[in-house]
Length: 578
Image (cartoon, rainbow, N blue to C red; front, top):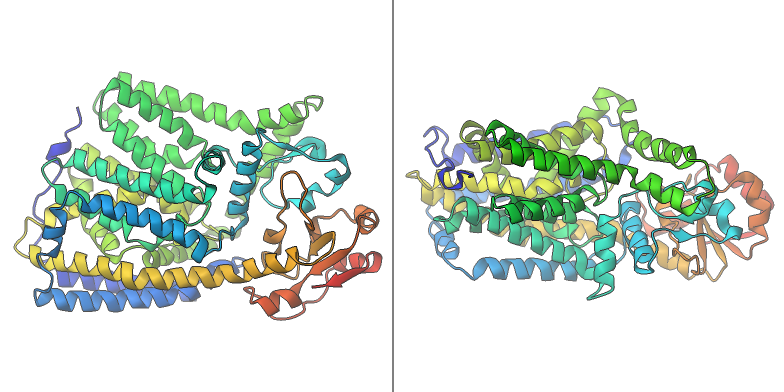
C-alpha cells in the first residue's frame, strides 16, 4: 500500500523566512527576464516576441509579490485561507468557475479560432473523425496541391490519396466526441475541470486529514493563467493535464480495478497527440513500484505501456497503409520516419547555446503564466519531496523528468501560453506546492505564509490573468482578421505568400472535404510545375506582407523582396492582392 498519510510535514530551517524566500523568488524571476533578454536564439524570433510580451507580466508579478510580502508582515489576511479551506463546497465552485471562464475565453479572447497550426490540426482531425473516417479522401484533382492545402504536420500518405494530421488521434477524438454532443468549444474547458477535480482527489487521498492541502493544490493550479488560457484553445496540453491527474487518482486507489482503469487511461494518454509525454509522467511511479518490490504490479504497467507504445507508434504506418493498400509497405514507414521523428529531433541542430537560450525563455514564460505562489511553494516543496518518501519523490520526478526531456528534445515550443510542454505536470507541481504548505503551516510564521499565498493567488487571478488574457487576445486578433479577409476575398482561391509573412503557412486552413470557398494554399508548397494548372482553376487572390502589415502580424513591416516562387507565380497567374 502507498504510505500516503505519512508524507513529510517536518520543519524546515528557520532561516528561510517568508520574506527571504519571497526575495529569492523575485531575484530569480528578474534574473530570468534579464538573461532571456540577452540570449540569442537564432531563427526562433517567436520565442523572443513572446518574452517581450510577457515581460510586463513578469514585472507585475514581482511588484505583486513585493506588495503581498509587505502586507503579510502586517498580518493582513492571515486567517483567510484557513476559513476558505474549511469549506467543502468552495473547491467545487472554483472548479465550475474555471470551466466557465475557459469556455467564455474560447469565444471572447480567441473568437473560437485556433491560433497555431497545432490547434488547426486538432480541429481538422476532429472533423474527420466526426465524419466517421480515420483520414479524409482527397479528390484526385487536388492531390497535386495537397502539400500546399495542408502545409504543416500532415501525415504524408502516398499519392496524397487522403489527409490527416501526423499527430496521434486522442485529443482530436475527444474533441469529436464533444462536437457530437454539447459542442467542441466545451472540450478543453471540461478537460480542465477533470484536471482540477483529479488534482483535488489526489490531494485528498494523500492527506485525508488535511482538507486545506487539497484546497491549496486546486487554488494554485486554478488561478494560473497557463491553465486557464490554454483551456481556451484546442491544444492537447489540457488533455495531458487531465489524463495525467486522472491516472494518478486511479493509481493511488491501489486496487486491481483502479489499476486496470489507470492503464486504460494510460493508453489514451500515450495516444493523445505525442506518444512521449504521458510515459514521462508515469515512469517515476512505475520505478517506485520496482523499488518497493511490487514486481507484479510494475510488470503489469510496463507490459501495458510497452504494448501501448508499440501500437500507437505503428498507428500512423497502419493508417497510411489503410488509405493506400496498393502502395509498397516502405512508403508510409518512410513518411513516418522522415516527416515525424526526424522533424521532432531536428531542433538539436541549432546547438547547445540556442537550446540554453530557449530554455531560459521557456522558464521565464512559465514564471509569467503561473500563480507566483505556485512557483514559490514548488521551490520550497521540492527539497521536501526529494528528501522524504518514495511517493513524493515520484511526484517531483514526474515534473523534473518531463522538463528535462522537453529541454533536451523540444526546447522550441513555438506558439503557446506559458511553457506548454510543462502543462501535463502542472498538477504535480501543485501537489508539491501543497506538500510545502503542509510543512509551512507547522511553523510559527504560518500566518505570514498564509497571507502570502492568499495575496499572490488573488493577484494572480485579478491582475496577472487579465493581463495575460489581453496579450493572448492581441496576439490572436490579427490571425482572426486575416482569416476574415481571406474568407471574404470573393475568389475561388487564396494563395498565402508564406515567405513574406511570418507564420503565413498557418493561414492555409481548409475543410477536410475541401468544400470551402476560397481554398487557401501556401505559395511555397505549390509544385512549380503545377502553377499553370492552378492558374486555370479560377480566380485567385494573394495574401502577402502588405496585408500582414496592415493587420499587425508579428514581424510584418511592409513589402519584402519577392521570392523566386512569388516571381514565378506572378508571371503565370493573374491574381488580386488582398
